[in-house]
Image 1 (cartoon, helix red, strand yellow):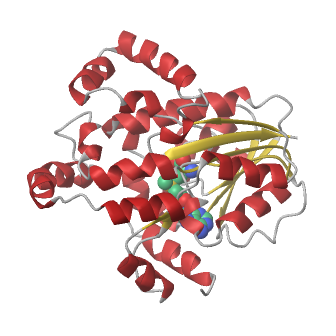
Image 2 (image 1 turned 60 degrees about the vertical axis):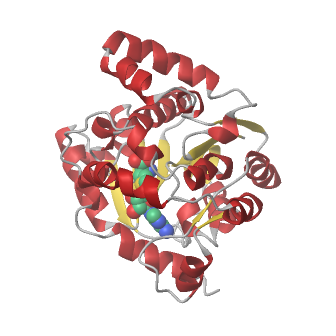
Length: 311
Ligand SMILES: C[S@@+](CC[C@H](N)C(=O)[O-])C[C@H]1O[C@@H](n2cnc3c(N)ncnc32)[C@H](O)[C@@H]1O
């Protein structure tokens, strides 16, 4: 496969003009995104000791780069998408940290502009690495090369993605506000009945995803290999696979988590009730943070598998 396909398709998909705006509103809209962000935010803030410079790869609309800059860190905000970077600049300015962040438009598939150990820490959150399939291992290698102290990644979880094959309406369980103006919320709600009606469990597809980690049907992958698909084919990691890659790269103190694993086990009516009450929400998020780091559940994070590695 021509390795530039992932890059080309990412450029096309993530440069859609409304991308930055929609991404920046996710935590107002979806409960699983609130839980994931809360988890990653705690992990990143707890890792800042001794860190002055950070590379944020696939930094999006700045959920973490802005937070880092607000904590006095010098950040390189790197992303393939101009709409994301534009939105991030707008939010950074509002947060008063525009001058603390260097914004770079580029592809994770090529980090040759950066030197070995140039940054104290590298982060890449909410699956940019998985979107670089089939280059995901090389990209982790490059992120590892350019940082000297700490590496924090959240990639697509293979085990965590499998429930989507048996429950295509699961995202609608996480909608916090059904009246949200987000077109995706309205799409989830208006297609719910149709998706239930047309659903049929496909054991072969589930086994294939479990064995290979490539999220996408055969026709989609074939189209992707021709550079034709309008979306990314995502690679889902198994926990031991990600750990093994990091160990082979020389990282030793590796901890992992599956943000959203606990919430996944709770019915949506109760989940929404908890999230609508600020006191319960805080307690619940605190407990999720603990539970989701338990090694026996981390593969079942909602979408993401998190790893922090320290040298
Ligand atoms: C789901 S968003 C996550 C953004 C941010 N890390 C966060 O957690 O809010 C994924 C981001 O990865 C970026 N991305 C996707 N493929 C990329 C690539 N090949 N190189 C650089 N960035 C990429 C997208 O433009 C998008 O901003």
